[in-house]
Image (cartoon, rainbow, N blue to C red):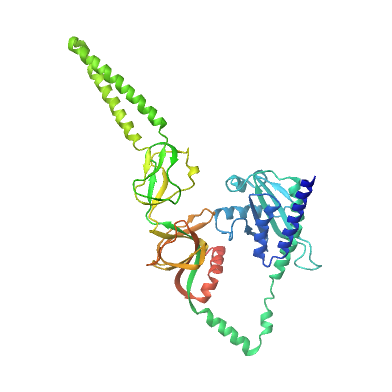
Length: 455
């Protein structure tokens, strides 16, 4: 009984603490981050999406769990926006699966989302009479997971939905400025002077720059591949270990190959004995000479099979082609795994030869030239930036593990800089050409407008 009471008390305490954090959110962005990430403490789910309804019946994804800045142009985000737009207008909390959505979105449901979803509308009913803020549909919270939703989940989310909607409406109301108030506070020559200064600053030359995730990767690593078909038996090294040239890295299971070799040797011995016996008989019986050539060919074939299998047995152990650091995933991911000849297992790289790999999102792309300045801020030591120069920029954008599209950039470390440990991650600042302050500030809004109107 005490355990049940303790769990109930912890659940109520978590609910109160979450409501407190939601009420104290200072911005709409902070509110969205808390809703999609902290709700998991009360209701288990794999992913949460906060959908914001916009004027005109449209909407957009305001926040998504696990992503700091959702890329609206990513294939997953485009599909998700279409799905939530089709679900707009439904009342009440409801469990949804692929069968309850239009065929266009339902056909791709299994590719993007778990099977069970829960849609929680967020309505603000707290406005005063005649207020534009009260009594309106703000959007919805969309939760997905692998297990079906229970009545307990629905009741808990119904309570949270009221708190979320109230806090969200208050933050949205706080963001509605009086667009003309500044005109009333500035009069005469002072206002004209400020306007002139603002226009002049718009033409101030500045350097373009963007921030993008980056990682330290090896330069020209040597790929170690499976030398034969087999099963990984053991590793003699650990990830990120320094090895010497010729050192054994791993070994494949030799049992199956050894069995084949034993059978081949036995077959060779039998064929050799048959050939010698036929050769002796051929001395006294000329008719035995007719089978002598066949037996000799069989003996030579078996001998070649033995030589071939002995050669394969010499390739059971895979050795380092050069000295350096070995880079691969956890050892336990490979033990017992079947591999085919030529399959990539790990890489060996020189720890002193490294470069910076940068994934520049499509929405942040700017004109870049070779040798453009790059500054790397490592996550483990952001106070000490590392300088570099751009050496490569991909022509086409490629999908990222987060589901977005990004250009792949590479940068060399500046002369005299000791490269950090391979695998370290951080944020890279890439500087481009000079432009005006107006374009620097308005670049992203102009890009969004251009995409919206199709120019």
